[in-house]
Length: 145
Image 1 (cartoon, rainbow, N blue to C red):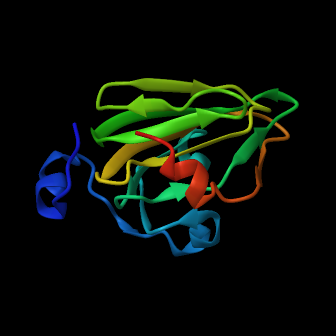
Image 2: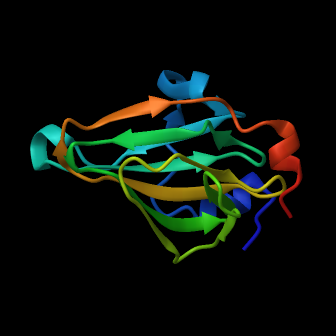
């Protein structure tokens, strides 16, 4: 469900957009917001609501792990994209769940004409780390409809 208006989006964004995602801004095209929902130190799993303004997307990246690991995205509001390297992009809508195994290069973000929000689950594992790669080019992104 595309949502162009920020105020309308905030009514649908159940967990709130949180603060500007300044810590990871270098890995995003456009502005994103981060609202941590849990602390990995307290419960072992980190969950956060990530909000993307229209056109915002993160860089290609890989969740590395020697055991377990990866990421799960629970789409909650707006409309976005998810793409694995070498595959077609998948349109994301509220209620969809994307399971990203470790070692899979991918990106995710908002559609050009919609705000988008998802809950990101970092799957516990051994030797987990993220490798941030190149940005999704405007040319690649512009081909998506």
